[in-house]
Length: 169
Image (cartoon, rainbow, N blue to C red; front, side, top):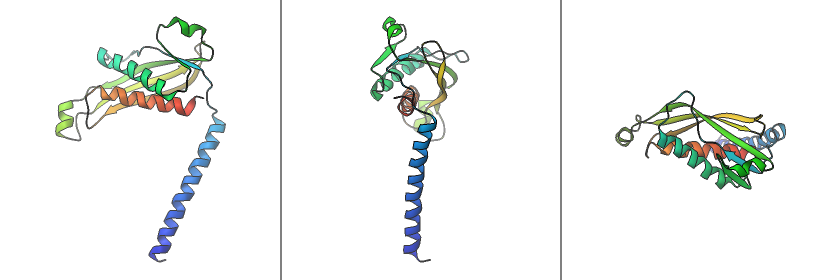
């Protein structure tokens, strides 16, 4: 086979993979329909296993609220302790529990690209008002190269917002 034939075959394979991927995505959506919710209450980040420093705890919480609001998937995003959430129809509650934390070094990240990473591992659980679990997933927030240690909380929040977009209508 000549170079043009190989290039065409490669392009055809690429297009076929794209079509298969989109077809399997829609098939997956029919197997796992999106969760319907009009409001979410985000509870303060907890930790049963890790002594998470307060700045990380607050940054995780605030970043998740901000990123979930940006998805525009919910009419209302309630904070922990907001009494109005109790009367909200279609309420989902997000509980988070930190189970892993490695504080990296900003200085090491600036000097090398292989050391100094910060990592936060969090178990996320979306429940209905009664506490019935609707969706659970472990999410890891990282900062590996450039940025302060708290940037890992932003990475985590972005991943939670992707979960919201993928699973809620």
